[in-house]
Image (tube, rainbow, N blue to C red; front, side, top):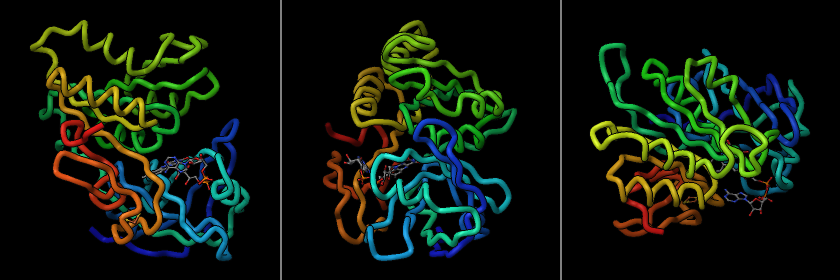
Length: 263
Ligand SMILES: Cc1cc2nc3c(=O)[nH]c(=O)nc-3n(C[C@H](O)[C@H](O)[C@H](O)COP(=O)(O)OP(=O)(O)OC[C@H]3O[C@@H](n4cnc5c(N)ncnc54)[C@H](O)[C@@H]3O)c2cc1C
Ligand code: FES
């Protein structure tokens, strides 16, 4: 895998809604090898503060254009939202392993793929949906409330069936997206349960997906988030405990199978 450090001009950096932003830049190197689930590390300011880069998932790639979406939640993402189109951005990527998925053609791969997104977890799953769209994945999008639901139109434009879950019931299923997942899978017969689950979202959501999928012998891949320092495996600042010992989320992940993680 080719990882590059590039300085590139921001092409687009605008608010989508609330605290959610979309940023685009051009990079032929990243575009050439980027896989869904991989991320980039961004130097959010021109100076040394903050020192650490911020990891953001690759949300989409069109030709040489890389798309990201991010939520402004602290000083790093606040600074990023202040960068303008035309400013130079220092980016390292693509980083991490990404999701594993089969070659999807019209004749191949009859598995049912279910994508489970919590909040900003939609970010890498849109890129994955684009790659496996011939399989017509089912997408479950969860958020606390209606106005935090993201990317519904992007999933629909890719031909995915998307179902919403909100904690407060302001849109779609009332409850956690993991409860929606359990409800959908409980209606299937054992033979129908040959599904693959791909999930990204908050830690409690991923834990629930992993425990449920393991208990029901369903394959799952989860994209984890950890605070990162180096972002490429050198500092051990992002380790997670697995059945095979500690692994680095930035280098060995961020995508892990539900079976390998311990909680
Ligand atoms: C592989 C990976 C992919 C990511 N993809 C995206 C993405 O596509 N879009 C997006 O908006 N965000 C994404 N994130 C999270 C993003 O990196 C953080 O939100 C960002 O670094 C916060 O920086 P900040 O300085 O604005 O806030 P900080 O001041 O660093 O943090 C604000 C709050 O968020 C918590 N927090 C920050 N980073 C993390 C983290 N990595 N894990 C858990 N809690 C954290 C802090 O504890 C604090 O409470 C990703 C993280 C990882 C590891
Ligand atoms: S952030 Fe340094 S090893 Fe992962």
